[in-house]
Image (tube, rainbow, N blue to C red):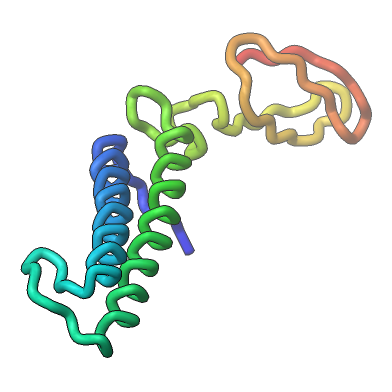
Length: 131
């Protein structure tokens, strides 16, 4: 499944919504223990208590999963908001192609800026290349 490009602001909004879902899940569990309907305060029938507990637990688990997901996404983004792993814009993870001057093999090199040392995996020749 291809990941959707999400901006830094959207990540923060989704992270806050995930934390809120965890809070609502705990509130639903508390209401189930007190046998009352959430947000209204009316009494809850005994048969609905297990359902209310299940709903609360599902909200807590899903909320925690999404909190970790969005925290990971925020860590992968640089402060400007673009994703570090995309390689777009010639960033540190962008790929560049060089030709070995010794054997003529085309080499794909990831990362690095400025002058980098490249070693050909075929002939072992070391050469410097500019990015």
